[in-house]
Image (tube, rainbow, N blue to C red; front, side, top):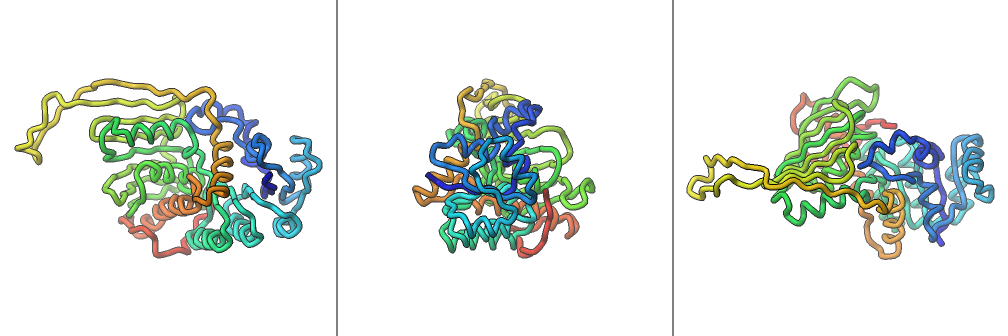
Length: 354
């Protein structure tokens, strides 16, 4: 039985399941989606302590769960000193995460689930990862799409060659480059690998964490075109040499179009070849109705990483890499919208997201 402590008792930790309008986002999170619900559903975990800024938040936790035996704290350091914890969830605003993760690692916890974005700067993320490496703590950054059946099906289809070789990615989502954009940067990496440069523009629509748009280039030559804050919903298109995989937040599952040549390519004229294509087939892969909710799958992944001594599917390194792409948009914008190479040299450039 893993003894669990939760720091932060807000929306993601406790109440997001109340937001029934999110059920329309069929390719986002599948309820139940809170940290509390995931721990209560897992037979290997027991919540023994929680921490929030106010006693009112702790009382709300008691009223919702009935778990009056769980000890409540308003100081996370006091909680780590008094409780022998195995797993800690960090569900606070991003500007607090680095100090909490580092303190949890130094307290000797076995695993941490940290909400995205991992930090406000690469310097913070570097320190968090270093602390976890030193203590042997497994750090999972909660990017739920990696655990969602839609995206896992899309990755399987891509790796099986359904649309040929991946050549470019188109991604769009609402709101901001770090708080929500981190979802987009992470899932692009999930399909395309590590990025090597970013060229971006930043919007003027938020005082600290605005939206933006631009290009992400990956080490394997794949380009991604991204627009954060310019449209509605979350959409992702994976363009291959022989087709397209489409994922739409408002449409369940994966949509695939497979193309074929009207006539065979001419090997004698590879540089000037015009290749008219036609739609060979269109396929639809719905999600299984009994798929495991991503929050519960993420928790089980963390337990498995502890027991198998491996990195999570969404690791601290992945969290830092997603953060770096978002911060690189700011670095590129400040430099006059020119490409900036990754890894970024300025580890102190700070973007405060929610």
